[in-house]
Structures are given as structure tokens and as C-alpha cells.
Length: 614
Image (cartoon, rainbow, N blue to C red; front, side, top):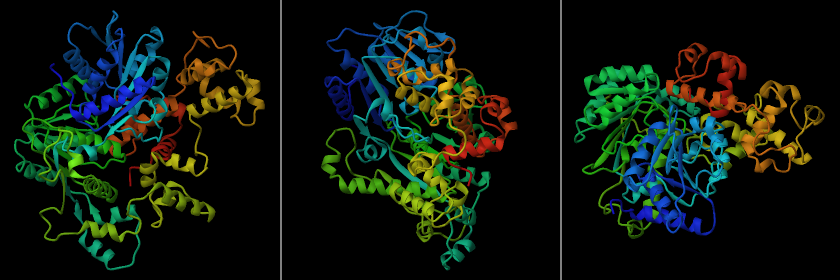
């Protein structure tokens, strides 16, 4: 057989098989980047239909590029005796195929063209996106015999849990365990610290002054010039055998500057240029015609270049998931690949903390897990070398060295915060009558900053909810739908506009009218989110339609998320002028309609996801 499952894949397949045998209809697999989730899913499909009549298979993903790569792998795995089709934008298979590969975006608008039981087996790749309101109704719509979710990063920035869709993971093999088992490339991680202010550090270390993380960042870190960064990248690349480099930048303009300074050896990919231009650049990089690729948030997922052996971070990521996705681009094993060199031009204490925690977790895993148990699977190399080495060094042009670990140790609250600690501190602040807003926390050296809270809880507002504090700002469309749905359940019928006006637990009818336009649209939103079966206790529920018009009831949340991601790419909160010139964002009048002014938009995004601009 052309494909042979590796031992860890056999472990995963055994757990999926147990789930199927227990008559469960869903499973979630969490597997680090580079370990072959797509091929694992192909084995799982093969096992599922062994002894069964073959049924249609649907793969869903948010990315067309990932789907086309998956289609090629499935064709190679299953062979040409099966038929394969795409369902993306205008490329929609006109005939029934055994395997259909569809983006959520295209399927969302066309899902009702398919019977709900059209597919026996559904695979959702990059399943951490599943809770997005633009994607969730599609997953809810279909009723397969088995649903398999695949992801390397199950945690979402907004704190929503995909386990509500797929159940708890049946198999987990994260980055740390995979690295320790020798399943990933050896990682040589270099923290290339920005030009530090020695005078400020000395003054701080010699005093009892207390600083917040933000104050410390602004005090001791001075941004390095792009020319110096490129000089250091080129210097380190000479130490790497046959370097093939990925550079992650803060924004498009930053990426253009870096690519220009890198010269002819570099190419550029970002969402500000056409897909065909990006595809040409990526193909040239894969084929080795170009040795360096400079990116803005476009290499996180689904880009498979195993021989890439150098990763350069020129941006700080708020999300640990994004950090691991980007790191995962380099640790993929490949023939002849000895190690990946990581250069992290960090200018943020929390990023240093993240890397130090990663190193500590790897060390702890290796200590707690006996070597003979760690390497009994026949996949990894012998335990003859360190799998993850961390080097901390200051730039060459400085004559002094700074012990950044000691600097962090002097900051009272720079340590591994736990949820329990943060909740205890926040409850005490509330009891003392102190403010728990983003600005108040960032100015208080005795409290975790807002970015830390957002990182640990998934979002700042998730923490506020756990504290029993209502979310600030208008309710999202999803929350309005939820409260209406619950009220209808209690009444065992659809509530009318008059009923809403008389129910003190609901928002005013004018709020629903403004968001959804009509009661029919509101009911349609409920059915799309909770499914026909979820509305069986309500009268007037028709399996075909509750109303004629399907509404974009999730527009508020979708706009907010897309605005946040675009701002994160740019490295600053976008203005309306920048939104107007951004090819992947909605019109400014759409943002005004659903959210309000630009300051309101920025504040909503900060409240929802945390402020990455410190």
C-alpha cells in the first residue's frame, strides 16, 4: 500500500474507531501542525466504510487553498476509482461526486440545495473556526453518519468552545509532546532582543519601583531599525544549511519594506494583492526558486512547505494559537532537514514570557515522562539531542548583555497567571469598588494587564462574564437570538412582537426590529442557529422554511472579527479610511450601520478580543 499510518496516527485512528463503535456520531482530533491530519482523516474514512456501503464524503474548510491541497492528497490516497469535486465560488461540481471539497463561505449560501443527509461522512479541517457564526449554521444543517473535526489549535480568540460541536477531543498530540517524541524537527529558538535601554533597566533593577507590563515594555524596549533586522536575518541564515526562510511581519507596509531590503532573494504574500499573485509567489517558494517569503498573516494555516527551515517573527501575536500555527510552519519534518532556526525579534515582555513558558513546559514534559515511554512509538529519533533549545542574546552592536529573565523576575506580576488567580484579583477589585476596565488594569502594576486576561480567558469579555459582569456595549446578534430562543422555549411557542414587549427579560422589540428587520427574519435566525430539531417544541415550524428571507443575523460579530484580524495584520487599529481601502473588509457604511463610529468600532474590538496595541 502506498500510504502507511505512522504509529501516532494508529493511536489516533484507534480512538476514532472506539468512538464509532460506541455509536457516537462525532469526534474531535487535536494534532500539532506537520503531523499529517489530512492523511489521518483519509485513513479514518477508509476504516469507517470498511464493511459498509460507501457514502458521499464532504470536507469543509474556510480556505480554498487548504481544500485544494486536501483534494490532491485524497486523490492520491483513494485513487481514481472515486470521483472528486470542488465547491468553491464559481468552481462548483455540477455532478454528484464521491468526495466534495467545499468552503464554508460558498456552502453557507447554497447548503439548502443539498438534502440534510446528502453526506455520510463530513470532515471539518481547521475546525477551530467552526464556532464562527458564518460557519456554524452549515455544520448544524447537515446530518452525516459521522462528523470529524481536525485542528492543531482548538482555542479561539473569542473564547467559544468547539467542543460543544464535536465533543471533547478523542485524541490530542500537541506541539510539546510531539516535539519531545521527536515527531517534529529539532527547534533552535533564538530570542533576538530589541535594542534595550540599559540605563532604564539599571535604574529599575536598583530601585523598588513597580511597573506594569505595558510600562516596562515602553521603558526598556526600543524598536530596531528594519535595516538592522535584515542584517541579522542574513547573518543568521549563513549559519543554516541551505536556508529556506519564512518571515512574519506586522503589516503590509512593513512586509514591503522588509522584502525590499531582503532583495531579489525574497517574495511577498499578503491579502492586499491578488490570489494569483500570491499563488505564484508561494509556488516559487515551494519549488525553491525563491528562498525567502515575507508574509502578513497568510502562512498560518494550510501552507505545506516541509523543507522550510528558518522562521522569523517580526510581530508579536496576541493569540497563543496563532503563535503555534506560525511556529508550526517550520517544525514540519522533511528528508534531510536537521533543524529549524527560529529568530524572534521580540519587543514585548509577554512574548518573552510565552516563549519561556514553552521552554519550561517542554523541560517539564521530558522530566515527567520517562524516555523509554516517550519513544516507544517508533516515530521519533533517538533521544540523543535536545529537541528544543532556547538562546537569549542581545544584538551584536551592543557591548553589554542583559539578563532579561532577571528583568522579568523583578516585575511583580510577570509570572504564569492562572485563571483562578485572575478571578480572585478581579473579585477583590470589584469588592473594593475598583474599576476592572481595560485601561484601569493596564495602569495597575498589581494586576494582570488586559492582554493577559484576554489570552488566558480567550477574550476580555469572557472573563467579565465569568465574574458575572454584563458585557459592555450592545448585545451581539447571537446573544439576541439566544435570549429570544430561550424565551420561546419557556413559552413553548414563537413569541410575537407584542409578547416581546411584555417580556421584561428580553430586549425591547425596537432592538430586534433594528437588528433583524422583521419577526420572520428573527425566527429564521433561530432556525439557522439551532436547527429545525431545536425548534420542534415551537409551533408553526416548517421543515422547509420558517420564513422566506434568510438574514445575516451574525453580521455584527462577523464584522467585528474581520476588523480585529485585519487590524492585527496591520499592527494597529484601522481607521475608516484604511477600511475603505482594504480589499477584504466591508464598506465603511456597513460598519457604521451595524456598529457605529470608528472609535466605537475600535472599543468593541478591544472589549471583545483585547487590545494588542500596547
